[in-house]
Length: 612
Ligand code: M6R
Image (cartoon, rainbow, N blue to C red; front, side):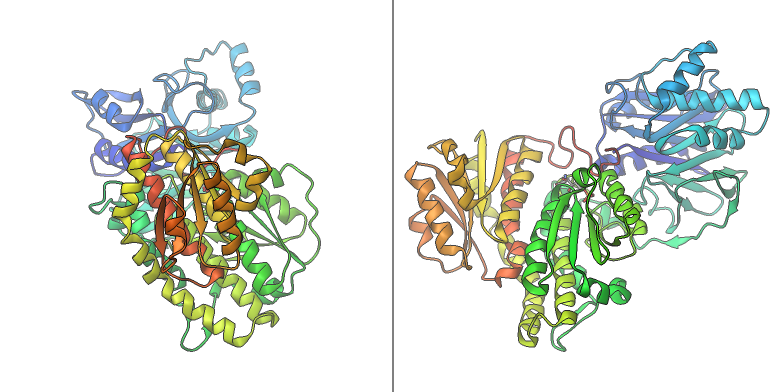
């Protein structure tokens, strides 16, 4: 949601900023803009639509500049149009501002400025903040840095902002609270961005700005101060991200690349952690907290979307292996009730981006009630990863497609390892089952590879259902969250209405929807629910529903009963979701492509949802 890129140094700023904005396109946005400073002063160019529309707008303009900043906006205050797009000038055009987040008390600030005679061109909270900063700067007689600090002390809400002023062509001021901001430190040059992806091709040295910090880059030097004006010494991290990881690498879409990366990403999630031969398992980030996890009376898992589905899978696994009661909550619901958290409770927060506002708020609430917080995040150094007491990164590599795929399988992998480690420590798993599951886990990448070999067959099935208007997905046990995930994938990228249900629950309502026009995807693998699921399939067939069944290799019974089958290798029941979800990802992808959808950036969606 919203992307920020800024640069000051010796390079041409405009092409660098535009390229950076393209790298952030995956976050989701509806308009884009840049501010540049050169002999013609501080100039802003912005356009509704994609970054290419902005590029066309810039065509023929004097864009030479060595300082500039750009923004992709995901509308919150005011519709997506040229005027509401960022950057925004301040009232006297002395500065320009870009902003990610929401200033909650902007209306009150706006009223005060209106009384002083200010007028506004946009409907945004960002323009209000820019005018507020300029007003303080003009009236207090201090520096711009001081004006930013004073303004942010008044501002309520979340933000990552960058400011350029006409007064100083060497200066960028940035600040953060609740929205991510990374500073790239080069040789006499600085980069600012919402994440490291626009920066890594220039430098691997980055600083993650903390909440309530302001970065002042001036005359080639960086200073970081807190909102109460204490100077801090920023820690320079080395990012491991390689350029090829954020490019399509010959695939038509990032989503397809990420689906096909899963054999590797699942292996990466286990790398250095699982030694099946020796029967050992280590999770470094959990070492000091494993006892606490194993002894916990209850685990509460919070997350949103796909991460919530991974939590549902984890619920089955933790209860089955470690015999710890688990509750899985939507972070957005958890944060607005008065949840009961008791001593000894563990909260596990799951998030690919590590920036989801609802999940972050749920963590803060759980912390305030005394819970110990574990994180399962993909993005290293993200806000959620830093807000937790302990945790394990998923190491899936950057996920650019808005529809989460490899992040899900990586989350399930890590959560399974956590459950296994807790079960071992607690003594609720036999040594032989522990070893068997570790060995089975090591075999998962090869099994996923095998499913990927069925891609052409899945494409043929997708072709038949391209114009379906609805879909139902059914599964039982560990395959129920997989059904939910399959339905989510389909609806978010193809815009087809799809529902996931526990297979047995169908007869309590959704069965009324079944007729010859209703495709029903059933995950019918050979596990403890197999016979029951077969009965559910018969119920669908009796009503002429068209069944696509995900079956276990060698199943000779179902092909004669259903319309289409997609075979997957035999896997231990506890690990089934890691494999059974893959054909559903491909099916959703193929249908969306055949319908001509923008698979990587579906309408209205953002990759990291940093507003509630
Ligand atoms: O970054 P997070 O895992 O916290 O994101 C949570 C959801 O926004 C995310 O999973 C969303 O549902 C995806 N678009 C699913 O494909």
